[in-house]
Image (cartoon, rainbow, N blue to C red; front, side, top):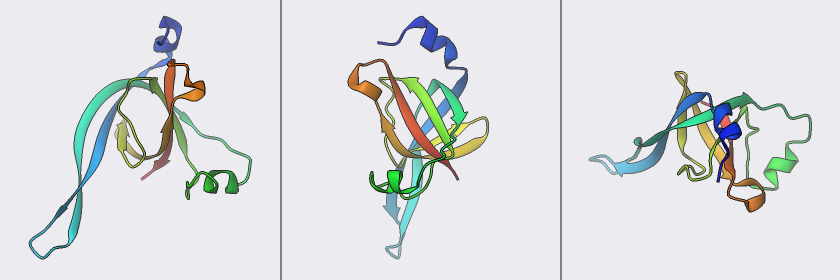
Length: 111
């Protein structure tokens, strides 16, 4: 459960979209995005001085450019698209740190 102090840090609306694949008349896959929700969030630039291999070990091939914080119950998963202030980001990973039901964090890549 989030606290009022944490919720006060969520200063931007983030729209979440889930990728869906459909096939056109010749059988080619086409990806569209379905709106999931708009949620209060905090978006920060991600600064990382370590090795990219740390992310590769977790199956993440691209280095994140941003980190998003939101309520723990936000339906966000890798592959989702997030729009904040007119910019789009791909969700590389989303998790609940510490497993204590406080908040969710996500690594994002600018698209």
